[in-house]
Image (cartoon, rainbow, N blue to C red):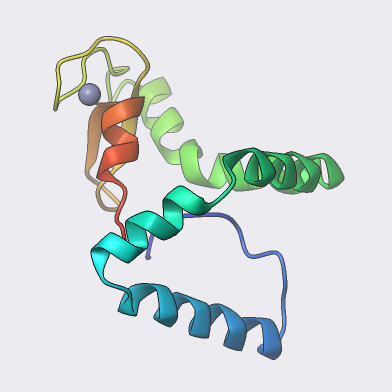
Length: 122
Ligand SMILES: [Zn+2]
């Protein structure tokens, strides 16, 4: 299983898939400086608004998506296999520490800041 990053796919069909693939390739081919500039240009406010609109339209889908991403770890914590995270393994912060998926089985406790920094840029 490949853990997906980013937003869920909202448009289905061959045409949308072709566009997604082309857009991904375009982004991947950019030099790192242009990738950073592109990310900096995006309007965070507009993205947040679009996300909120999509979630409001189908809360059940949002809930299922969230459960799929966080469910296995929450279940392991409940079973006592995993201790709830207390300290960021990178910076040592004790604030907003969450588990971060490295693979299907390996999880790393990271604070929100370090987790956001660790997301792949591809
Ligand atoms: Zn940290």
